[in-house]
Amino acid sequence: TWQDFSNGMPNVAVHDAVIQTKAKELIVGTHGRSIYKMDISKVQELTKDVLAKNLHLFKVNDRTKSDRWGTQNYAWGKPSEPSQTIWFYSDVDGIVNVSITNEAGMLVHTQKVEAKKGLNSFAYDYLLSKEVAEKWNKKDKNIKIKEAENKKFYLPVGKYKMTVSKDKVTETKSFEVTAPKKKKKKKLTFSIFLFATIISVAQDKKAYQIFDKKGKKSSYEKVLKASEKTD
Image (cartoon, rainbow, N blue to C red):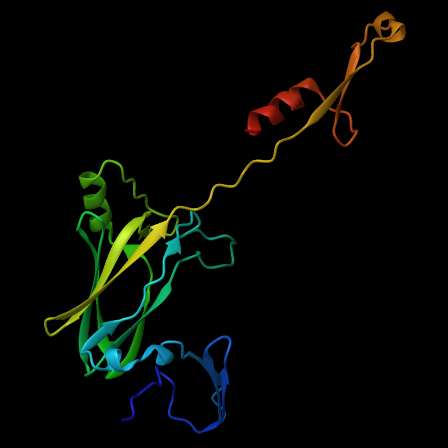
């Protein structure tokens, strides 16, 4: 049987369709309504076992936490915000409930998605409500969820479970928000050359001169500041 896979695409004539094998994408050229690109990787995962289910949630990918979430990098730009497309299969039309719990079993996010029979997707933005963030901070002293620059709260580092449910049928997948890798600080090397000469002493000047590794003149104060920044 046929299933709707338009995902918001307008009713317009399609003159060309090409599958990008490596990217697992379907590129569709329409008559005067631009080009549309669709992820078909989940179509390839629609096995007989999946189609036999009332509801199926596909893999939820892990995500690395970033300190830049909610931060506007440029005055004319938009804040950097995380997002992941979540895919699920439903055998009938209807409302699907989505929930996320942390390791302690605390409910940290809920939303409703209107599903059609077949493949469905929705965008998950890793947001927390202010009430959930404050409650979580009080419950767990090891967690410090701070308001981002854009006045929003985001999921902290940790392990989570996403559950989709409909008509007493549930599907759950685990995912993780991992900590960003720490960048190693580059060590600065300075070479100190001592020039003890009769002339410098006689002229009441310093009996030494400090050069950096590039051969440029430096100072003792600069050496100290550079050493404090290194490991």
